[in-house]
Each structure stands twice: as C-alpha cells, then as structure tokens.
Image 1 (cartoon, one colour):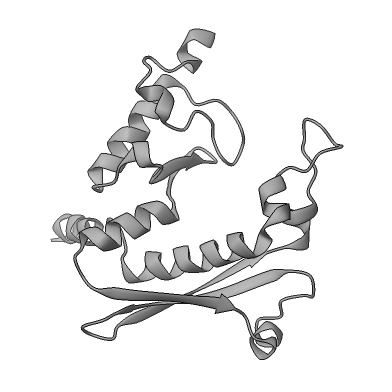
Image 2: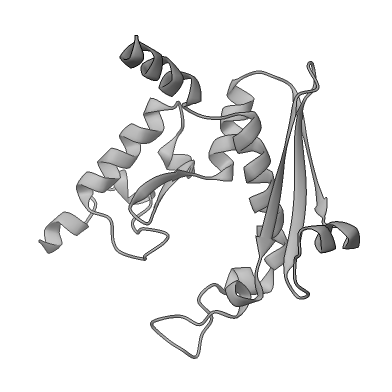
Length: 176
C-alpha cells in the first residue's frame, strides 16, 4: 500500500524516511516504532539520535553524545589518526582511513576506546541506481571524518552504554 509509505503528518516528515542500510522507504508504523524506541532510551528522534539500518534501530553518534551529556558525568573525548605502528598492528591496508578514539570519565579515569576505519571499497563504491555516480559522495570526499566519527561512536558506546542496565535488570528478574 503506497499510502502507508508516506508520513502521516508534516511533523513525521522531519524523521528519517528511509532505511539507511537498504534505502527502502520506511512505513508509517516503522517511523512510529522509531519514535517509541528513541523515547524509551531518552533520545530525540527529531534530532537524528536514532535511525533505521537494515530494518533495525541504530543509535548514531549524536545520540551517544546526547546520552553522555544527559548522564552529567564529566568526560573527555580524544581522537586521532592511527600511527604507522598502530596501522601495522591492526593490519590496516594502505589507502584506508583509520582513527582511534578514547573517551574517559574525568572523575574515575574509566575509559573506553574505539577504532574507525573507512575502506577503499567504501570510498569507491558506485551507486546501485546510477553506476556513473558514487554511492556515498560525502564518504569519498571526506573519508577521514567518517573514520573519526566511527571511532568516537565506538568509544562513547562503550563508555556510556544505552539500555544495558535495564536489560541486565530484566534478565535478573527472569532468572530469579
């Protein structure tokens, strides 16, 4: 039903309209479910904190940055390109962009690291609709920024997990 593929209101038009992984248009019900998912974890779907990727909700870096701020735990986030030694250690081939990031809680010193890589294949991939164009022109133009973003996302995701405490509590009550 084509009508189901359109947002029900202008307000919903501000939300993601397609699956980021497949490009398929989201149904009205999927958009509503995305809103509910975001709100369950205190995120704002209208600010792009969550998206749908390959049919599943995905919390992006903006969501993790927002969540980290909401915890009111002071932290630092540092990132840099991989050194030549680290590139060898992680076996990152020439031509790929690779960054590392470290998020640290200021008060306790607890930290988490992340690694972000953008492959040559990602930079050169052609659009499935028009083989004369790149699938992701922004990735091709700024691959280091995506590598940095991926590294920072991993570090934040590890230091400020979303939903973990609720899932652990639910698991405990089921086992007891």
